[in-house]
Length: 331
Image (cartoon, rainbow, N blue to C red; front, top):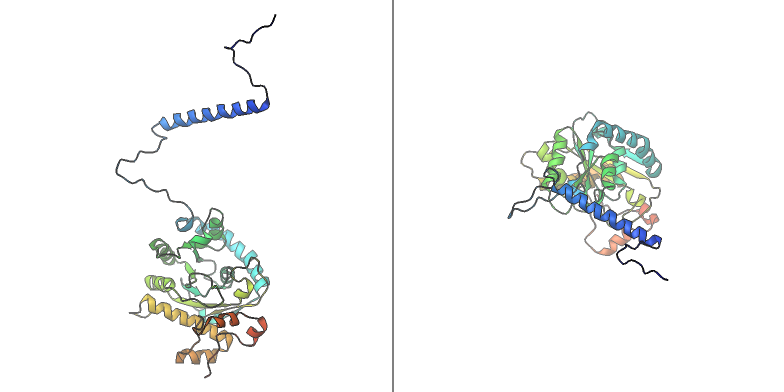
């Protein structure tokens, strides 16, 4: 005699897959019930937004919104000083063999200043952070591109900690970035800025923007023009790995804007001062000063004659050692 199965009796799973699936379903349903119960508690649920009022957008702690104040607290400053002196400077000394020129032009100076430098490589920042002398080296912040160095939750804290970077928006004029830099200058911090707004794509300079000039005028501090040479060979734009090359960092005399000079004129004067430092590196101080006085200093930007000069200027290392562009005009 055969017995029929009772249809009212619950059938048990017959294999491990069914058991695992049932366990996941039970856990998911329990999780939903717990979350629903927590949302029902007035103190734990979000405040409803009245009809007709736009909800407040939560600010992401990346990009231009990244808060770097923690990187200027004493624990972070001590950590950064150890990294700069124990890691960055030895690494740049071995990799870039930097020659520092013009430190005597900063002798006797103190207080916050704006350092404005040309920009050819990502290694410009660690090179300058290790080359800028005291008392500014360990009381320095670096204006860094918010869309690159503060793009995610990993690069943001690393940039703020290692080089003291603050986010600067490149694509638009942002009052938030300018206000932050101005507040830091007023608190005694110096600022390193690359007025070109980005690395050179082809080895030639780009027009200087007015950020450094604006900050100097707003805060009443001098601007130190800085010319960096050699980092384009060290780590050019697009390269993944650096190679050894000699570099030179030349500091110029601090510039102060006279009464009545606006940010646009001051920015042009800063660019001309950096170009004069490039001329000084390629020739000598006397010839560079003669050309600067006559207004014939070669521009940092590419010649307008044609694209072939850009390609020729970035040719073999042998030609560039014999004669580097821009060609120097005869005196």
